Image 1 (cartoon, rainbow, N blue to C red):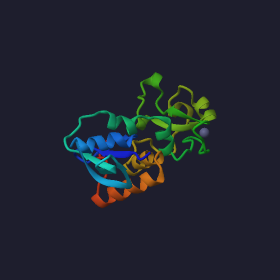
Image 2 (cartoon, rainbow, N blue to C red):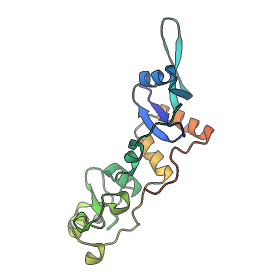
Image 3 (cartoon, rainbow, N blue to C red):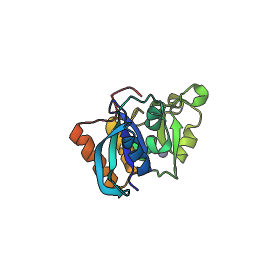
Image 4 (cartoon, helix red, strand yellow):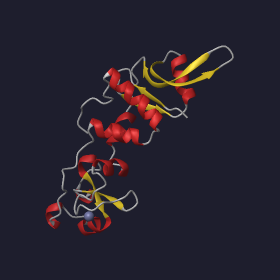
Length: 185
Ligand SMILES: [Zn+2]
């Protein structure tokens, strides 16, 4: 299994293809150009193909999915940003024990966005309940915010194998690619 990191034509992050054959198909049909390959090759009867590690699309793909991946306040993303630390009491949480807390409660019009969601342990979440920070005197230790480039990359790379991570990072550094343009979340 050698996944391929696919960049949009503007070199922003687009997708990760799980199947190498999908990545190879993009390249062979001239939809994408490979920027880096794995050492592994696959052979047909007549030809040998290097497996693409990173590929860039030839034309711009319009998508909203790219934003959705790291801009939704899902548990793994919120917890990674807050270093798995309850933002009210400072205790450590795990994916199993931790909860997400809306700083301004949803019942008070608080939005389900990264800049309004923090990591909280269950006791703190229960104590805060559906109340405003000022009403209970509970304020997050750090102001919730969208992920920066490095944190997004960290989330992306956490799920891939070291061989893939090395190939992708080497390629991104060599070409000076940042994957995301600075933009408010
Ligand atoms: Zn707590």
